[in-house]
Length: 377
Ligand SMILES: Cc1ncc(COP(=O)(O)O)c(C=O)c1O
Image (cartoon, rainbow, N blue to C red; front, side):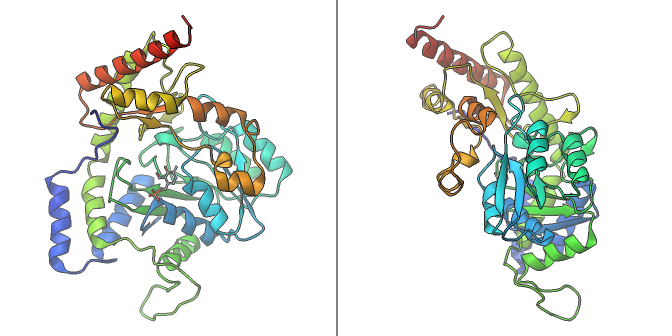
């Protein structure tokens, strides 16, 4: 079976984790501080606050901004469900914004319309599959409405838009959130990071991850908080992983370019990469031809020895959000289409050109078989 994703774990990663385990000091130590400094450097922000997952990073970021019951947070309709859940868990309402059908990222025109009609506390664009949303448009719309931007950059460490790095939300109150889940370019198993230039937001995030405790020599608990801390051995792994980031991104981009070539002249649509963007291809997500559903193609590809999966989720139509807010098919037409036609293919630094050829051939064969079965040419 050609696997969807395999993290790059090398000897230096194993040594780093073992080194921390051998000290017996496992939580929130010097490796966390070192990892935070290294991520801040990559993101180009003044602060980075390590937490236990990307979901925790998003939750902490929204709470640090003061998102509370009665607020609305505008976010892309197409994302992993954590994006909507953290808004709901703050007691706020996700204001879902339809996506651009070619990129799967928040549509700027739809965001503009959403901001005209509703009072929104924050905008949370999602950089789907490592491709940044149109941050020129998102930042300028947010600035017009004086709303902070929280980037869900879970998949996008190292990506850029107009030369600006993912996570470094360039507007007042801006924050960015990363995930270090094993399907991301840099992994700590589970793990996340909040980045920001804002001192007060960084302080709030540090308190929220650690029971509301202030920093410094005197312990005081100034707000209710969580245990969202990252362990020191995960952070040590993060440091060695981060040192490979450029190499990993280059390998992912090279493999993506090879797929682009393999799909030229076929009915498969490769992922878009607008001129302003440098995607890190956290996932390589193609568009299937009309009439084919990704959920039918996944088992057919498995039968041909290739692990694939859908792109990501249509959050407004997930049971909870559909029932709570009455969303229906047709409310977000581009998300409806992208949700059904997107398929994620195997992509990781160690994938060989031969394996990629096998994947492409299997997918084209599946599409042809489905077309023949449906009586299409
Ligand atoms: C877009 C997006 N947001 C948030 C998350 C949540 O990150 P984590 O799994 O680290 O909690 C993910 C995880 O895959 C994601 O893809």
